[in-house]
Image 1: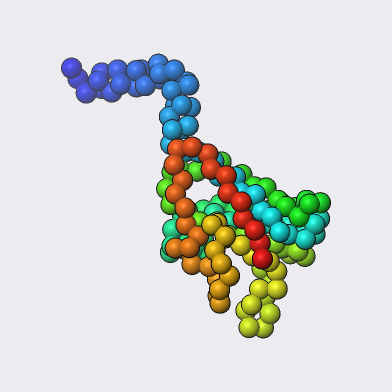
Image 2: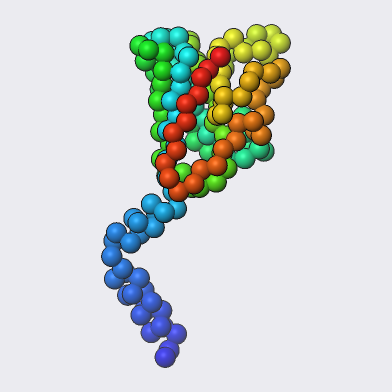
Length: 148
């Protein structure tokens, strides 16, 4: 069979695949992470939630981030969709003045509340990836993070 005809047959077979096959494949390859943030000052500012996919990127280059207003009860909820299974960590900032960044004093100590996945105990300096990491499988995941 000539190569051109073989390619044409392959393309026609590919185009004839049901549309839901591709959608169901995506469902297997990705899922979601919902992050419930607690402990913020009620109705004051925003929560910034960042998702990281490895130790090298942790607290530097998120794969995704979202900002939502803090609710009347001092919470905020963010959902990251279409996330591939793997190892991740989440960091959270209660951006109480809604300026889009973590405010610190002259020593670099945060003036605003922060948190991370697994709610690691506060220590001198930012949380370590090792303490904040978690595994995302094929099922959607819900995390609860308290800012301090």
